[in-house]
Amino acid sequence: MNGRDYDVVIAGAGIVGGTLACALGNQPLRIALVETKPPVLHWPIGARDLRVSAVTLGSARLFQALGVWDDLCAQGVSPFYDMHVWDAAGPGEIHFDAAGIGEETLGYIVENRCIQAALMRRIEQCANVVWCCPASVEALELDGDHILLGAKQSERLKTRLAVGADGADSALRRLAGIGAQAEEYGECAVVANVKTSRSHQRTAWQRFLPGGPLAFLPLPDERESSIVWTMPAERAQNLLALDEPGFIAELQTALGDKIPRQGLGRVEAAGPRAGFPLRRVHAESYIAQRLALIGDAAHTVHPLAGQGVNLGLGDAAVLAETLLRAHAEGKDIGARSVLRRYERARKGEVLAMMAALQGLHRLFGSQHASLRWARNLGLDMTDALTPVKNLIMRHAVGGGSHRSA
Ligand SMILES: Cc1cc2nc3c(=O)[nH]c(=O)nc-3n(C[C@H](O)[C@H](O)[C@H](O)COP(=O)(O)OP(=O)(O)OC[C@H]3O[C@@H](n4cnc5c(N)ncnc54)[C@H](O)[C@@H]3O)c2cc1C
Image 1 (cartoon, rainbow, N blue to C red):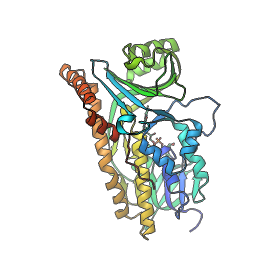
Image 2 (cartoon, rainbow, N blue to C red):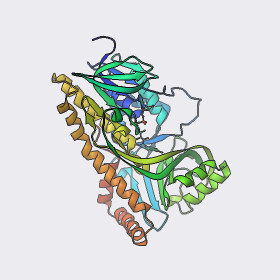
Image 3 (cartoon, helix red, strand yellow):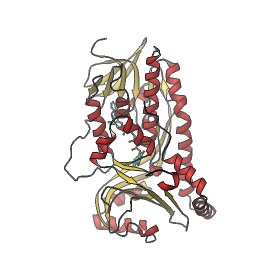
Image 4 (cartoon, protein in one colour):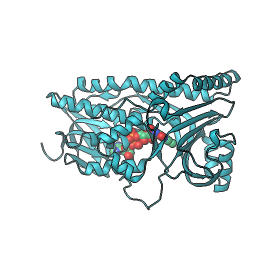
């Protein structure tokens, strides 16, 4: 094997690609991790990332197994014990709590760049992982029992398996000729970190508005939350252009004054904002010859339930486990039969989650009077039916998923 021969080349060192590299770290496989943009590893003390993720218990357990959880905790993860969801167009309300499902927390809010930095520090300790950055995979060619990847700013990489972890616009998906079903929602998620007059009470708050959901996710400071506010794209442009007092006034109106348990209070300050256009993308296949897709490259979902990263982490864990088992059994890790095992293990869970998110998006997006009535009744009935509610929550927090690699 020469310096450019690998067992696995991972294109994309976002949270999902970085996690796969960690899971394959210090194993008897030679890995290259190729990334276009150098990740941010240092920032001023107290500065917060605009992007955060609600990390499920299953994902937290995966990070523990990979040896990155302690690093994340040292940087600051924010556990939440309750979740309140209520409808602006009626009295419907539902409340979930960790005790109801016998867990200490429902999940954790973690800044994306903290996750990436912790993963990078772990990868540095893995002698079998070669870091190629900045470099972009731009060409792909099959060569017998290998695949050749052409990368801008890098030599050609020869590998037994290429993994596309390169996000919703995946170049590897396109280069491998894998089609994708894509739907533009015509919506944008506006994100910002805000200060409120009252404590967030370690609770994730979500109010469904006619234009889309508004979520307040608790940050480590008890009066600081990260908001994710979905709305029609045009309205988002207007809101992004407002000055801080104008934006706070709109946000306060959207939050309303009937906040359950007197949480949050008034919005007092809002930091910089950013908008993310939303779409749904689902690859027609997660595999091709000597290639596998993971994370947003395979499936991009609406952020209304905070599941995108978590689904991608499930892919990374299952792919790592599949490859390591195949290698231990002396099999070719790029063989179709091996990759099929990965796809079969993931597609069912992803399709079920995508269908649930589509259903929620339609149900809460509709202003039809009968649907409004039904969803408010549904929220209240589910809230009253503790076993059903706890079943939903147990699934959402990913209690049992993401077996470690
Ligand atoms: C507003 C918002 C809020 C969200 N909140 C949550 C949440 O609370 N919880 C949750 O689970 N999910 C959430 N999501 C979804 C989540 O952000 C995504 O699912 C997740 O970031 C996807 O990670 P990824 O690593 O697959 O892709 P990406 O994060 O897109 O990473 C892809 C990486 O590949 C690199 N790359 C691209 N092309 C190439 C190439 N050709 N060669 C090499 N490298 C390349 C990119 O530079 C990038 O670093 C949210 C999404 C949005 C928009």
